[in-house]
Length: 102
Image (cartoon, rainbow, N blue to C red; front, side, top):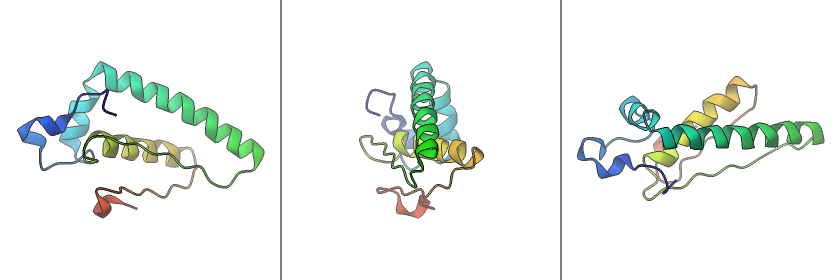
């Protein structure tokens, strides 16, 4: 995620995480973030379809950023919502933000 703009460099977002609406709104205004998200969606759509066809029971996805607070949390939250809407059971674990895991 280091190739994407980092909200953590802005004092207003220092205590927030990617799960906070203000951080999500900031990231979603960035063209590079939206393009990255489209690539992630395409990759995971293909993987999930293949796993379902082949009968696999689990797939792990990991996101990382400098502090594990903004970009990676945002993408993990976004992907969790997206996959759950597709009927995929998701266990979300934020290694650097354990209170957000579910």
